[in-house]
Length: 363
Image 1 (spheres, rainbow, N blue to C red):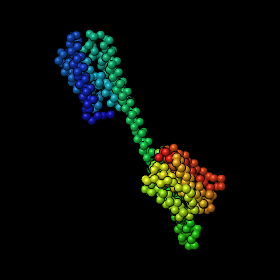
Image 2 (cartoon, rainbow, N blue to C red):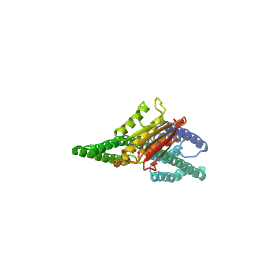
Image 3 (cartoon, one colour):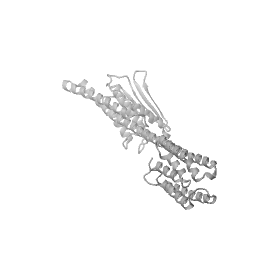
Image 4 (cartoon, one colour):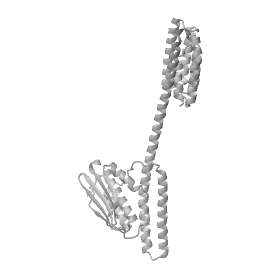
């Protein structure tokens, strides 16, 4: 903890110690205490106080200077130097050693400058000196704790941002590549050309491998889970919903839409979450139940919006694409933040259903 230049606090502390030192000299001169003339003691007090301007840069040198000056007059600035030693010296061993040395020198200094005041003044001065050092040490501990807390908060914010970015990357890339795998699989099973079938199989394998590698990178990126990220969305939410359904149909998924969502311009946070639920549900259906009849159900009430994506049992073998654990986790966190609920699981007929209930007043 090294300050580059003297601060206003340093100037204030030095000024107060100089004024206190001059007042002490005046009181001592009236009592006839000490061996040096008052002018020399005043100069010593003011000079030692001036050293405090460097207390944050060179705390040990300032302490040594104040202790040495106390041979001429008990320097008030020594208290501020002891506080600076506890506050600015990083090594506890060094700071404690410096204070023990300062206390050791106090005895002969008292014999030379203040013996007539009695031993109680000596012990009182030592206690005050140690108290000043302890106050500086406690302040340093508090500052270190505050800095560590701020660093943890910053690290947690970065980790949350990384997790949100990872989920967005996963949602976008996984969504597109899942459809690419399904289309390649359709091409492989319908084409009569051996070369086309071979190329389609290679495309599907490459996409699966790429997704697996992407998830490995994302798991390394997300050291801890963060908050859900807001997805991007075009200005027309209804058109975006139609586009996602059309994309699933092009991949060979028979999708039927039941109901509708009230239009908002621009789409609110609930509308954007509905798109996320529908997109995740269709992607999972294409991935795990290609060719299965799929129903997107929308029920937009006055106070509550219900959306579900349900597919029947697979009519073809799954694509082999595995989930990365990012899509549903991020989606559930997003829905819960809005005060809603989300559940996902198999149905009795061997299909799968993803369902979310969102309160409209949370928007």
